Length: 443
Image 1: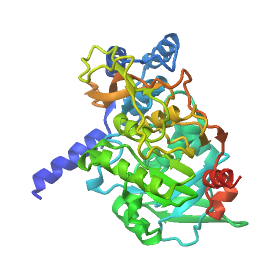
Image 2: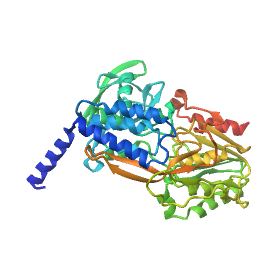
Image 3: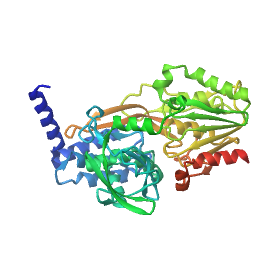
Image 4: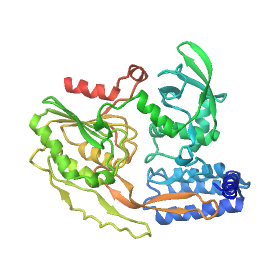
Protein backbone atom coordinates (compact mmCIF):
# COMPACT_ATOMS: atom_id res chain seq x y z
CA UNK A 1 0.00 0.00 0.00
CA UNK A 2 1.42 3.44 -0.89
CA UNK A 3 2.65 5.39 2.13
CA UNK A 4 0.44 8.41 1.31
CA UNK A 5 -2.72 6.24 1.25
CA UNK A 6 -1.70 4.48 4.47
CA UNK A 7 -1.16 7.80 6.22
CA UNK A 8 -4.54 9.04 4.94
CA UNK A 9 -6.34 5.97 6.33
CA UNK A 10 -4.62 6.29 9.71
CA UNK A 11 -5.45 10.00 9.83
CA UNK A 12 -9.10 9.40 8.84
CA UNK A 13 -9.58 6.70 11.46
CA UNK A 14 -7.92 8.78 14.18
CA UNK A 15 -9.98 11.81 13.22
CA UNK A 16 -13.30 9.92 13.33
CA UNK A 17 -12.39 8.09 16.54
CA UNK A 18 -11.44 11.31 18.35
CA UNK A 19 -14.22 13.34 16.81
CA UNK A 20 -16.53 15.43 18.99
CA UNK A 21 -19.82 17.16 18.22
CA UNK A 22 -20.93 20.52 19.54
CA UNK A 23 -24.21 20.99 21.45
CA UNK A 24 -25.59 22.83 18.41
CA UNK A 25 -24.83 19.86 16.12
CA UNK A 26 -26.22 17.39 18.66
CA UNK A 27 -29.47 19.29 19.13
CA UNK A 28 -29.94 19.75 15.37
CA UNK A 29 -29.55 16.03 14.71
CA UNK A 30 -31.79 15.14 17.65
CA UNK A 31 -34.54 17.39 16.29
CA UNK A 32 -34.05 15.87 12.82
CA UNK A 33 -34.28 12.35 14.31
CA UNK A 34 -37.51 13.09 16.20
CA UNK A 35 -39.06 14.70 13.15
CA UNK A 36 -38.20 11.69 10.97
CA UNK A 37 -39.54 9.20 13.54
CA UNK A 38 -42.86 11.02 13.72
CA UNK A 39 -43.00 11.43 9.95
CA UNK A 40 -41.96 7.94 8.86
CA UNK A 41 -42.67 5.41 11.61
CA UNK A 42 -46.21 4.04 11.10
CA UNK A 43 -46.95 3.56 14.82
CA UNK A 44 -44.38 5.35 17.02
CA UNK A 45 -46.62 5.65 20.07
CA UNK A 46 -47.86 2.09 20.32
CA UNK A 47 -45.67 1.33 23.34
CA UNK A 48 -45.03 4.78 24.79
CA UNK A 49 -47.27 7.74 25.54
CA UNK A 50 -46.53 10.68 23.24
CA UNK A 51 -46.14 13.05 26.19
CA UNK A 52 -43.59 10.71 27.78
CA UNK A 53 -41.68 10.53 24.50
CA UNK A 54 -41.64 14.33 24.37
CA UNK A 55 -40.29 14.46 27.92
CA UNK A 56 -37.42 12.13 27.00
CA UNK A 57 -36.70 14.20 23.91
CA UNK A 58 -36.74 17.46 25.90
CA UNK A 59 -34.27 16.07 28.46
CA UNK A 60 -31.89 14.97 25.69
CA UNK A 61 -32.25 18.28 23.88
CA UNK A 62 -30.87 20.16 26.89
CA UNK A 63 -27.36 18.88 26.14
CA UNK A 64 -24.88 21.69 26.90
CA UNK A 65 -21.50 20.05 26.32
CA UNK A 66 -19.70 18.46 23.37
CA UNK A 67 -19.89 14.65 23.05
CA UNK A 68 -17.52 12.21 21.40
CA UNK A 69 -18.71 9.54 18.95
CA UNK A 70 -19.48 6.91 21.58
CA UNK A 71 -21.32 9.36 23.85
CA UNK A 72 -23.30 10.61 20.87
CA UNK A 73 -24.34 7.08 19.96
CA UNK A 74 -25.69 6.54 23.49
CA UNK A 75 -27.42 9.94 23.39
CA UNK A 76 -29.45 9.08 20.30
CA UNK A 77 -29.91 5.48 21.37
CA UNK A 78 -31.93 6.78 24.33
CA UNK A 79 -34.49 8.29 21.94
CA UNK A 80 -34.54 5.24 19.63
CA UNK A 81 -35.12 2.86 22.55
CA UNK A 82 -37.87 5.08 23.97
CA UNK A 83 -40.41 3.99 21.32
CA UNK A 84 -39.70 0.33 22.22
CA UNK A 85 -40.02 -0.94 18.64
CA UNK A 86 -37.82 -3.97 17.93
CA UNK A 87 -37.75 -3.16 14.20
CA UNK A 88 -36.33 0.35 14.78
CA UNK A 89 -32.57 0.69 15.16
CA UNK A 90 -29.49 2.89 15.08
CA UNK A 91 -26.54 1.23 13.36
CA UNK A 92 -23.31 0.45 15.19
CA UNK A 93 -20.89 1.74 12.57
CA UNK A 94 -17.12 1.42 12.07
CA UNK A 95 -16.44 4.35 14.37
CA UNK A 96 -17.67 2.18 17.25
CA UNK A 97 -16.79 -1.37 16.13
CA UNK A 98 -14.33 -1.92 13.31
CA UNK A 99 -15.78 -3.81 10.31
CA UNK A 100 -15.18 -7.57 10.13
CA UNK A 101 -12.62 -7.27 7.33
CA UNK A 102 -10.42 -5.22 9.68
CA UNK A 103 -10.61 -8.08 12.22
CA UNK A 104 -11.92 -6.47 15.41
CA UNK A 105 -11.07 -8.53 18.49
CA UNK A 106 -13.60 -9.68 21.10
CA UNK A 107 -13.75 -11.59 24.38
CA UNK A 108 -13.44 -15.22 23.20
CA UNK A 109 -16.34 -16.78 25.05
CA UNK A 110 -20.10 -16.91 25.27
CA UNK A 111 -21.92 -16.26 28.52
CA UNK A 112 -25.27 -16.83 30.20
CA UNK A 113 -26.87 -14.60 32.80
CA UNK A 114 -28.82 -15.91 35.79
CA UNK A 115 -29.98 -13.57 38.58
CA UNK A 116 -27.66 -10.81 37.33
CA UNK A 117 -24.65 -13.10 37.56
CA UNK A 118 -22.54 -13.99 34.53
CA UNK A 119 -21.33 -17.53 33.81
CA UNK A 120 -19.19 -18.95 31.02
CA UNK A 121 -21.33 -20.85 28.54
CA UNK A 122 -18.74 -21.66 25.88
CA UNK A 123 -15.05 -21.00 26.30
CA UNK A 124 -13.31 -20.29 22.99
CA UNK A 125 -10.14 -18.86 24.57
CA UNK A 126 -6.71 -20.41 25.02
CA UNK A 127 -7.27 -20.64 28.79
CA UNK A 128 -8.59 -24.12 29.62
CA UNK A 129 -9.34 -23.19 33.24
CA UNK A 130 -12.53 -21.43 32.17
CA UNK A 131 -14.95 -24.32 32.08
CA UNK A 132 -18.70 -24.17 31.52
CA UNK A 133 -20.40 -22.62 34.57
CA UNK A 134 -17.37 -20.63 35.74
CA UNK A 135 -18.69 -17.42 37.27
CA UNK A 136 -17.15 -14.16 36.10
CA UNK A 137 -16.97 -11.78 39.06
CA UNK A 138 -15.07 -8.85 37.53
CA UNK A 139 -13.83 -7.65 34.14
CA UNK A 140 -11.05 -5.09 34.12
CA UNK A 141 -11.49 -4.67 37.89
CA UNK A 142 -15.17 -3.69 37.49
CA UNK A 143 -17.56 -5.85 39.54
CA UNK A 144 -20.23 -7.51 37.39
CA UNK A 145 -23.24 -5.64 38.91
CA UNK A 146 -21.62 -2.30 38.06
CA UNK A 147 -20.45 -3.55 34.67
CA UNK A 148 -23.97 -4.74 33.76
CA UNK A 149 -25.29 -1.27 34.56
CA UNK A 150 -22.59 0.36 32.41
CA UNK A 151 -23.11 -2.00 29.46
CA UNK A 152 -26.89 -1.53 29.52
CA UNK A 153 -26.36 2.00 28.19
CA UNK A 154 -25.11 0.50 24.91
CA UNK A 155 -27.86 -2.10 24.41
CA UNK A 156 -28.69 -1.44 20.77
CA UNK A 157 -31.08 -4.35 20.13
CA UNK A 158 -34.44 -4.87 21.80
CA UNK A 159 -37.90 -6.38 21.35
CA UNK A 160 -41.36 -4.81 21.18
CA UNK A 161 -42.64 -3.09 24.31
CA UNK A 162 -41.21 -3.17 27.80
CA UNK A 163 -40.02 -6.57 29.03
CA UNK A 164 -37.01 -6.95 31.34
CA UNK A 165 -36.51 -10.60 30.32
CA UNK A 166 -36.32 -9.64 26.65
CA UNK A 167 -33.79 -6.92 27.44
CA UNK A 168 -31.68 -9.50 29.33
CA UNK A 169 -31.94 -11.89 26.36
CA UNK A 170 -30.49 -9.38 23.88
CA UNK A 171 -27.95 -8.25 26.44
CA UNK A 172 -26.69 -11.83 26.73
CA UNK A 173 -26.66 -12.38 22.94
CA UNK A 174 -24.65 -9.20 22.33
CA UNK A 175 -22.41 -9.39 25.38
CA UNK A 176 -19.11 -9.52 23.43
CA UNK A 177 -20.06 -6.52 21.30
CA UNK A 178 -21.25 -4.54 24.32
CA UNK A 179 -17.92 -5.16 26.02
CA UNK A 180 -16.17 -3.91 22.89
CA UNK A 181 -18.31 -0.76 22.87
CA UNK A 182 -17.59 -0.06 26.52
CA UNK A 183 -13.86 -0.82 26.70
CA UNK A 184 -12.96 -0.18 23.03
CA UNK A 185 -10.71 -2.79 21.46
CA UNK A 186 -8.24 -4.40 23.86
CA UNK A 187 -5.53 -6.99 23.20
CA UNK A 188 -6.46 -8.71 26.45
CA UNK A 189 -8.98 -8.46 29.26
CA UNK A 190 -8.47 -9.11 32.97
CA UNK A 191 -11.03 -11.39 34.57
CA UNK A 192 -11.71 -12.33 38.14
CA UNK A 193 -13.51 -15.68 38.18
CA UNK A 194 -14.81 -18.28 40.59
CA UNK A 195 -13.57 -21.74 39.68
CA UNK A 196 -15.51 -24.12 41.93
CA UNK A 197 -14.72 -22.57 45.36
CA UNK A 198 -11.49 -20.86 44.34
CA UNK A 199 -11.16 -17.25 43.17
CA UNK A 200 -8.66 -16.60 40.40
CA UNK A 201 -7.39 -13.61 38.45
CA UNK A 202 -6.88 -14.46 34.78
CA UNK A 203 -5.87 -12.62 31.64
CA UNK A 204 -7.63 -13.60 28.43
CA UNK A 205 -6.43 -12.60 24.96
CA UNK A 206 -9.14 -11.10 22.76
CA UNK A 207 -9.59 -12.71 19.34
CA UNK A 208 -11.02 -11.81 15.91
CA UNK A 209 -14.29 -13.32 14.70
CA UNK A 210 -12.56 -15.68 12.26
CA UNK A 211 -10.70 -17.27 15.18
CA UNK A 212 -13.89 -17.53 17.23
CA UNK A 213 -15.71 -19.30 14.38
CA UNK A 214 -12.81 -21.69 13.96
CA UNK A 215 -12.71 -22.52 17.67
CA UNK A 216 -16.50 -22.91 17.76
CA UNK A 217 -16.38 -25.43 14.90
CA UNK A 218 -13.48 -27.30 16.52
CA UNK A 219 -14.80 -27.46 20.09
CA UNK A 220 -18.53 -27.68 19.38
CA UNK A 221 -18.86 -29.42 16.00
CA UNK A 222 -22.29 -29.60 14.39
CA UNK A 223 -22.94 -33.26 13.63
CA UNK A 224 -26.29 -32.81 11.87
CA UNK A 225 -26.19 -30.86 8.60
CA UNK A 226 -29.90 -30.02 9.02
CA UNK A 227 -28.88 -27.68 11.84
CA UNK A 228 -27.95 -25.10 9.20
CA UNK A 229 -31.39 -25.19 7.58
CA UNK A 230 -33.95 -22.58 8.53
CA UNK A 231 -36.67 -25.23 8.79
CA UNK A 232 -36.29 -28.98 9.21
CA UNK A 233 -37.95 -32.05 10.71
CA UNK A 234 -35.49 -33.22 13.37
CA UNK A 235 -37.61 -36.10 14.67
CA UNK A 236 -40.53 -38.02 13.16
CA UNK A 237 -42.08 -40.99 14.94
CA UNK A 238 -45.61 -42.26 15.53
CA UNK A 239 -45.45 -40.68 18.97
CA UNK A 240 -43.81 -37.31 18.32
CA UNK A 241 -42.61 -35.20 15.41
CA UNK A 242 -40.35 -32.19 15.97
CA UNK A 243 -40.35 -29.25 13.55
CA UNK A 244 -37.56 -26.73 14.15
CA UNK A 245 -37.93 -23.31 12.52
CA UNK A 246 -34.81 -21.21 13.03
CA UNK A 247 -35.89 -18.36 10.76
CA UNK A 248 -38.46 -17.26 8.19
CA UNK A 249 -35.73 -15.52 6.23
CA UNK A 250 -37.06 -14.71 2.78
CA UNK A 251 -33.83 -15.04 0.80
CA UNK A 252 -33.27 -18.67 1.69
CA UNK A 253 -36.92 -19.67 1.21
CA UNK A 254 -37.24 -17.90 -2.13
CA UNK A 255 -34.19 -19.73 -3.50
CA UNK A 256 -35.98 -23.03 -2.94
CA UNK A 257 -39.59 -24.07 -3.25
CA UNK A 258 -40.85 -23.40 0.25
CA UNK A 259 -44.44 -24.43 -0.41
CA UNK A 260 -43.36 -27.85 -1.69
CA UNK A 261 -40.86 -28.24 1.14
CA UNK A 262 -43.55 -27.60 3.76
CA UNK A 263 -45.93 -29.97 2.02
CA UNK A 264 -43.21 -32.62 2.06
CA UNK A 265 -42.64 -32.17 5.78
CA UNK A 266 -46.32 -32.52 6.67
CA UNK A 267 -46.69 -35.46 4.30
CA UNK A 268 -43.96 -37.24 6.25
CA UNK A 269 -45.69 -36.40 9.54
CA UNK A 270 -49.01 -37.70 8.18
CA UNK A 271 -47.40 -40.91 6.95
CA UNK A 272 -46.05 -41.56 10.44
CA UNK A 273 -49.46 -40.67 11.94
CA UNK A 274 -47.71 -38.77 14.72
CA UNK A 275 -49.86 -38.01 17.73
CA UNK A 276 -47.81 -35.03 18.92
CA UNK A 277 -46.04 -32.21 17.11
CA UNK A 278 -43.44 -29.97 18.76
CA UNK A 279 -42.75 -26.72 16.90
CA UNK A 280 -39.63 -24.94 18.13
CA UNK A 281 -39.51 -21.22 17.26
CA UNK A 282 -37.16 -20.14 20.03
CA UNK A 283 -34.61 -17.53 18.94
CA UNK A 284 -36.51 -17.18 15.65
CA UNK A 285 -36.25 -13.49 14.73
CA UNK A 286 -38.87 -13.71 11.99
CA UNK A 287 -38.93 -13.03 8.26
CA UNK A 288 -41.68 -13.30 5.65
CA UNK A 289 -45.22 -13.57 7.02
CA UNK A 290 -46.38 -15.50 3.95
CA UNK A 291 -44.10 -18.37 4.94
CA UNK A 292 -45.85 -18.65 8.30
CA UNK A 293 -49.19 -18.78 6.48
CA UNK A 294 -47.95 -21.75 4.43
CA UNK A 295 -47.30 -23.62 7.70
CA UNK A 296 -50.53 -22.54 9.41
CA UNK A 297 -52.55 -24.11 6.58
CA UNK A 298 -51.46 -27.51 7.93
CA UNK A 299 -52.14 -26.66 11.59
CA UNK A 300 -55.39 -24.68 11.85
CA UNK A 301 -58.71 -26.47 11.59
CA UNK A 302 -60.78 -23.47 10.44
CA UNK A 303 -60.23 -20.61 7.98
CA UNK A 304 -58.48 -17.71 9.64
CA UNK A 305 -57.99 -14.03 8.92
CA UNK A 306 -54.50 -13.21 7.72
CA UNK A 307 -52.45 -10.15 8.51
CA UNK A 308 -53.40 -6.73 7.19
CA UNK A 309 -50.99 -4.03 6.11
CA UNK A 310 -51.50 -0.30 6.36
CA UNK A 311 -49.27 2.73 6.69
CA UNK A 312 -49.62 6.02 8.52
CA UNK A 313 -46.20 6.99 7.21
CA UNK A 314 -45.83 9.79 4.67
CA UNK A 315 -43.55 7.39 2.79
CA UNK A 316 -45.76 5.60 0.28
CA UNK A 317 -46.32 1.90 1.01
CA UNK A 318 -45.43 -0.35 -1.92
CA UNK A 319 -47.32 -3.44 -0.78
CA UNK A 320 -51.02 -3.94 -1.47
CA UNK A 321 -53.36 -3.64 1.48
CA UNK A 322 -55.19 -6.81 2.39
CA UNK A 323 -58.95 -6.56 2.80
CA UNK A 324 -60.42 -7.20 6.23
CA UNK A 325 -62.27 -10.30 5.07
CA UNK A 326 -59.36 -12.10 3.43
CA UNK A 327 -59.07 -15.58 4.90
CA UNK A 328 -56.67 -18.43 4.46
CA UNK A 329 -58.16 -21.88 4.08
CA UNK A 330 -56.62 -24.85 5.91
CA UNK A 331 -55.40 -27.74 3.76
CA UNK A 332 -57.33 -30.91 4.49
CA UNK A 333 -54.71 -33.18 2.94
CA UNK A 334 -51.86 -33.77 5.44
CA UNK A 335 -53.42 -31.40 8.01
CA UNK A 336 -52.15 -32.23 11.50
CA UNK A 337 -54.88 -33.09 14.01
CA UNK A 338 -52.88 -34.20 17.06
CA UNK A 339 -51.48 -32.25 20.00
CA UNK A 340 -49.30 -29.25 19.17
CA UNK A 341 -46.64 -27.85 21.51
CA UNK A 342 -45.00 -24.56 20.52
CA UNK A 343 -41.70 -23.72 22.22
CA UNK A 344 -41.15 -19.97 22.77
CA UNK A 345 -38.63 -17.66 24.36
CA UNK A 346 -37.64 -14.00 24.49
CA UNK A 347 -35.98 -14.34 21.07
CA UNK A 348 -39.27 -15.35 19.42
CA UNK A 349 -39.94 -12.24 17.36
CA UNK A 350 -41.96 -10.86 14.45
CA UNK A 351 -43.21 -13.63 12.08
CA UNK A 352 -42.58 -16.40 14.62
CA UNK A 353 -44.93 -14.56 17.04
CA UNK A 354 -47.52 -14.28 14.24
CA UNK A 355 -47.38 -18.08 13.82
CA UNK A 356 -47.63 -18.81 17.55
CA UNK A 357 -50.35 -16.22 18.20
CA UNK A 358 -52.61 -17.79 15.54
CA UNK A 359 -52.13 -21.19 17.14
CA UNK A 360 -52.63 -20.14 20.75
CA UNK A 361 -56.42 -20.31 20.95
CA UNK A 362 -56.77 -23.80 19.48
CA UNK A 363 -57.82 -26.52 21.92
CA UNK A 364 -55.03 -28.86 20.82
CA UNK A 365 -52.23 -26.27 21.24
CA UNK A 366 -50.03 -25.42 24.23
CA UNK A 367 -47.39 -22.69 24.21
CA UNK A 368 -44.38 -23.49 26.41
CA UNK A 369 -41.54 -21.22 27.49
CA UNK A 370 -41.33 -17.49 28.17
CA UNK A 371 -43.09 -14.34 26.94
CA UNK A 372 -42.13 -13.56 23.35
CA UNK A 373 -39.93 -10.63 22.38
CA UNK A 374 -42.28 -9.51 19.61
CA UNK A 375 -45.72 -7.96 19.98
CA UNK A 376 -48.63 -10.41 19.79
CA UNK A 377 -51.16 -8.19 18.01
CA UNK A 378 -48.93 -6.89 15.23
CA UNK A 379 -45.75 -5.02 14.45
CA UNK A 380 -44.25 -2.14 12.53
CA UNK A 381 -42.18 -3.85 9.86
CA UNK A 382 -42.59 -5.18 6.31
CA UNK A 383 -40.54 -2.55 4.50
CA UNK A 384 -37.83 -0.27 5.82
CA UNK A 385 -36.05 2.95 5.05
CA UNK A 386 -32.79 4.32 6.42
CA UNK A 387 -31.36 7.81 6.68
CA UNK A 388 -28.22 9.46 8.02
CA UNK A 389 -28.15 12.20 10.62
CA UNK A 390 -26.64 15.27 8.90
CA UNK A 391 -24.02 16.28 11.47
CA UNK A 392 -23.09 13.14 13.36
CA UNK A 393 -23.50 10.72 10.43
CA UNK A 394 -25.24 7.96 12.40
CA UNK A 395 -27.59 5.83 10.31
CA UNK A 396 -31.12 5.07 11.50
CA UNK A 397 -33.45 2.34 10.19
CA UNK A 398 -37.22 2.74 10.50
CA UNK A 399 -40.11 0.46 9.46
CA UNK A 400 -42.67 1.79 6.98
CA UNK A 401 -45.69 -0.46 7.45
CA UNK A 402 -48.11 -1.18 10.26
CA UNK A 403 -49.07 -4.86 10.31
CA UNK A 404 -52.12 -6.17 12.12
CA UNK A 405 -51.80 -9.90 12.82
CA UNK A 406 -55.56 -10.35 13.46
CA UNK A 407 -54.74 -12.62 16.38
CA UNK A 408 -55.31 -10.87 19.71
CA UNK A 409 -55.62 -7.45 21.32
CA UNK A 410 -52.87 -8.27 23.83
CA UNK A 411 -49.48 -6.64 23.39
CA UNK A 412 -47.42 -9.59 24.59
CA UNK A 413 -47.77 -13.26 23.69
CA UNK A 414 -47.55 -15.21 26.93
CA UNK A 415 -47.12 -18.98 27.07
CA UNK A 416 -49.73 -21.42 28.31
CA UNK A 417 -47.01 -22.83 30.56
CA UNK A 418 -44.25 -20.45 31.65
CA UNK A 419 -40.96 -22.35 31.84
CA UNK A 420 -37.54 -20.71 32.15
CA UNK A 421 -34.16 -22.32 31.68
CA UNK A 422 -32.76 -23.05 35.15
CA UNK A 423 -29.15 -22.71 36.21
CA UNK A 424 -29.00 -26.36 37.29
CA UNK A 425 -30.31 -27.53 33.89
CA UNK A 426 -27.78 -25.26 32.19
CA UNK A 427 -24.93 -26.88 34.11
CA UNK A 428 -26.27 -30.35 33.33
CA UNK A 429 -26.64 -29.51 29.64
CA UNK A 430 -30.40 -29.97 29.73
CA UNK A 431 -33.08 -27.83 28.10
CA UNK A 432 -35.73 -26.93 30.71
CA UNK A 433 -38.38 -25.95 28.15
CA UNK A 434 -37.80 -29.04 26.02
CA UNK A 435 -37.94 -31.33 29.05
CA UNK A 436 -41.24 -29.78 30.17
CA UNK A 437 -42.77 -30.34 26.72
CA UNK A 438 -41.72 -33.99 26.82
CA UNK A 439 -43.25 -34.38 30.29
CA UNK A 440 -46.60 -33.10 28.97
CA UNK A 441 -46.46 -35.62 26.14
CA UNK A 442 -45.74 -38.43 28.60
CA UNK A 443 -48.84 -37.47 30.61
